[in-house]
Amino acid sequence: MNRAYLEGTRYYETPECFLYFISRLLSRSGDPDLHALLKPLLKERIQERIGAEGDSSALSMRILTCDFVGIRDEVDLRKLLALQCEDGGWEIGWIYKFGASGICIGNRGLSTALAIKAVETMSQPRHRVSEFSMPTRVGGRSNLRPQSETFRNL
Image (cartoon, rainbow, N blue to C red; front, top):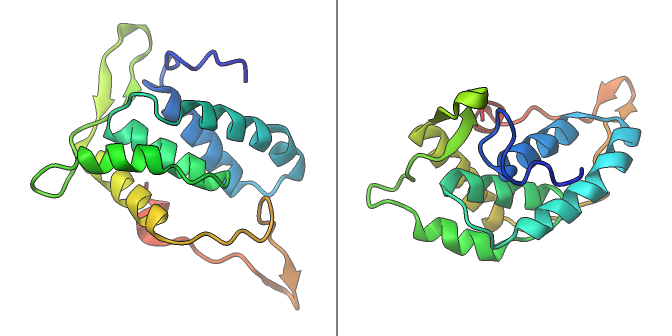
């Protein structure tokens, strides 16, 4: 990663969106070569973003990506909590854009769901057994557990 994503990408409005989707790719992949190649670089790049400006979606994705690589991002959690609206939700955050047109797409529900997941993640202690979990088979059964419905649909 050569930081070309810092101004967003053709389709992702923020650097955090790009980095978050890299973390999602890695979280679903059991490929040790892919993890060895991308995870240390992802950790370095997301750590550089801690404290940067961002809307509720960007802050939430940053917190979740930090958590994925084993970093606690208290700085952005404080910023995210300060953005919470009186009704308990978070304002719309921009996720996607239509290529060169610059038309941005976001959703308040998605921003709120990401923020809730980020706050929930930060409220739980993390005990990582290894750099990444690999599915294993014991007696013909996989150790993979289904993700919660909320997480799967984000």
